[in-house]
Length: 135
Length: 68
Image 1 (cartoon, chains in turn orange, green):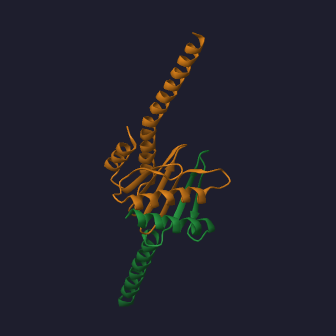
Image 2 (cartoon, chains in turn cyan, blue):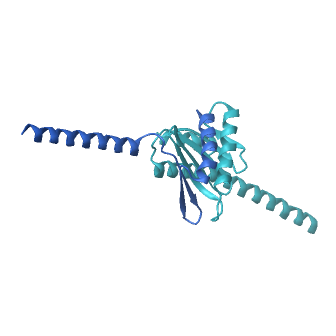
Image 3 (cartoon, one colour):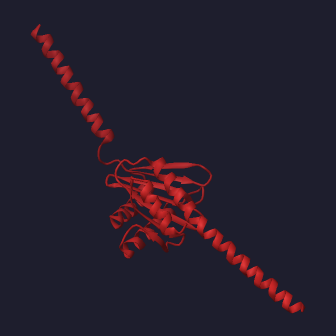
């Protein structure tokens, strides 16, 4: 499943999520429910900034929720990606966080086989070169 | 008799006003907080007025306005 599909599924299953952005760990947007790329980029940058600003003695946070009267912001990250989402007032945090983690996992499932395939191709090429050298 | 009724009425109205004020305070505006979850399973809440919340809330507000 690619990043856009993972995000589309997220918005479909979670009625509480109004908008979401899937980004690389450095804030590069991978997929977004926002039509405006500039706004999606701003959301991703602010999500990275939130994670950095919330880092404490126990290391970097893996997820956070910020609640304000206008709504809530959720950010969940793994080693390579993060997903940021906004909801209205008084969401159910457990459900939203679960859906965001699922989205990250689905987006990662696509990336990992691609990495493995690239690594296999590299190994095959190296093996071929070794065989050529021996012949 | 009339005095007792008046007292009961005042107590009832006072209770209603108090309950309404408490309900408004609990569910009402100004509820701001930050919940941060770490990889080791720990979680910390920064309440409104803390230094951490003061640092994080403006970023979240900016993010919210970008997303809407």
